[in-house]
Image (cartoon, rainbow, N blue to C red):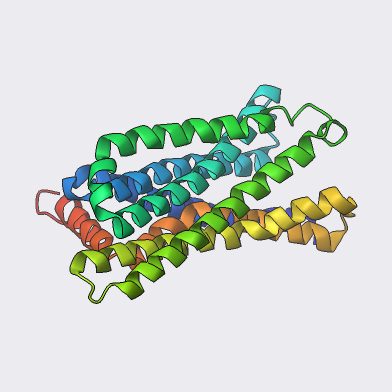
Length: 281
């Protein structure tokens, strides 16, 4: 497959992905901030994730522009884009993990959650998650100009990326087991319990989609480091598919919300009806 054909295929797939993801995540932000009843702690996390995904998709658009024009970004801009891309990825994982922990607290320890889970504390914690993601992504800022393989920095970043996937998987697995045990012990489920259960299921699907999208890319990184995988045609195609899948994760979250949350669907319909379908517009 020639380079030009690959470039066209990537563009045909990625550009609609960017448009869909930007529209979906923008809609998530509008739904949360224009509908007061959607400003719960859970949707504050989701709106912050939407900001992260929007930034990730804008960086992806910059990558596509660079591929077509050959525009040289410069060393500092290359460092900055790599840093921001990893920061957004880590930030999304942290948001999913801490939101799941909060749902466990609300579901299994409701009285304690009434005291601990507040909007003010949620906003403060979200800010801390962004700072933590930025600190974790700092090593990637140095990878553009350094001989990262010989310095061991590449191995460190691979280990860090794997930890960011494996540790949350273990945490979320434990969280879902504890929530399932609580469900079995409760004789009846109230409407609030059902709502919490739907939220937990939605978060599980979001994280599962994230892992499935990023897993081929992570496997490729490990294989390349361990065996210095020869870049033949099959490996190039694998990397291309893995790269596209990893970028897909930033666009599908709003679709998951829409499919799994009746509350989100209702808020979207209300927002569209109010701002697009009234006679004045």
